[in-house]
Length: 176
Image (cartoon, rainbow, N blue to C red):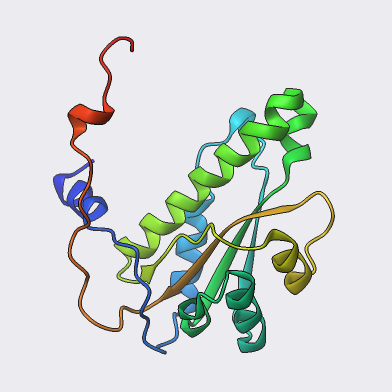
């Protein structure tokens, strides 16, 4: 990995202001392809991504996300979903309750990084009413929405870097 790539990853920010500029299909495909290169337990790939561009659906997703209206202003919104049973078929309860969520989190992070490195802005939204999102998108039983990612061109300048905890506070050597 080059230092430029590492610096690019370190510069990613959660952005909540988007221009109305559309995203070319080729870039959307590249973002999704990068997302789907995420690791998954046993290569089960227990995920689905719903692409949302219809304004009424984006508005309803914003409502389901507690009124986070910035997401409805993004040209495209991805809703990342887990299919826990696909992991459970191989790994039982641990696949159902953990691996499917880990796998979709890895996919979500890959999407966020690809979005940023291709010059777009996004935000990982986890605060939403699952049942409302399921209803808005007609998500079938057994599929669980776990993240909402609005994507667009940055409307203004990149926000400053948020304060992070000191590594010495969170890195434990050998054992607690």
